Image 1: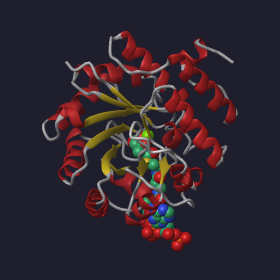
Image 2: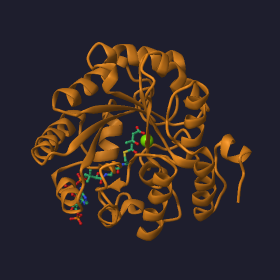
Image 3: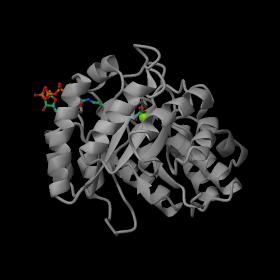
Image 4: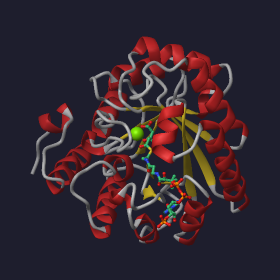
Length: 297
Ligand code: HMG
Ligand code: MG
């Protein structure tokens, strides 16, 4: 078992995209700086999507352009199409993520096209991105269930994950968008994916809507997954998945991994302070039990 487990911080994107209060470019850059200072090296910085659909992610290009690409940090941004890729390239992106789904209805609602059409769009994006030396990650949403269709067959998740892998995505992040998975269903899904995509290229992206995310991460670790997405303070949700609440909290994942003896290089105190700071900016308190227990002002 490898001792290295990566955490991809998605707070500045997934964490903010569903919040009622919109943050300024300055505040978003500040958040990313604090997360980097706490030891996170992969921080999703925004989304090059339609500002009419997700106003919270407007000006993601300005956020990205303000970040120092020092070679030690990665700042991926979501890109749904070639228009988004152009914006990302112009802002200096070195990492992008395309985002598909294992549910037809969710795909239509989220990105206005079928799964097959989305894969055709992504193929063009991945090809051009790779020609520019850009690293591409591929998301699959609704891996444990869909807000519109209910249960999703593990084989459907594996089909989409495999298609993203074949087109050149270097990592496949499996999203339990509405946090319905349990270790039982997540392991069945991972088993199906494992037959088509090497586990070392798989990441777990688990929302904590029903309090199962840490259990799902532990089960996924046992199944060989070595990368997890998480959001500071447990912020997060998806505007096109009613009832989707926060991602698993970064500080709680870091605490779990440290307790299991994995190296993360993360300063928990700094993370907890950041969780309180960002939650305050958004007008609330952190959702994570760990941040509440580590309350520091
Ligand atoms: P569309 O309507 O099919 O696009 O939307 P279109 O090509 O017909 O263009 C319509 C308008 O959108 C035009 O503007 C375009 O310029 C504009 P108008 O002429 O009306 O003023 N447009 C864009 N603007 C900025 N950037 C772009 C872009 N493309 C078109 N890249 C589109 C298709 C995908 C763009 C749209 O549906 C969209 O932006 N959707 C947002 C989806 C989204 O961000 N969802 C949340 C993230 S996914 C998620 O949270 C799940 C995840 O966390 C994993 C998990 O938890 O499962 C990743
Ligand atoms: Mg998500």
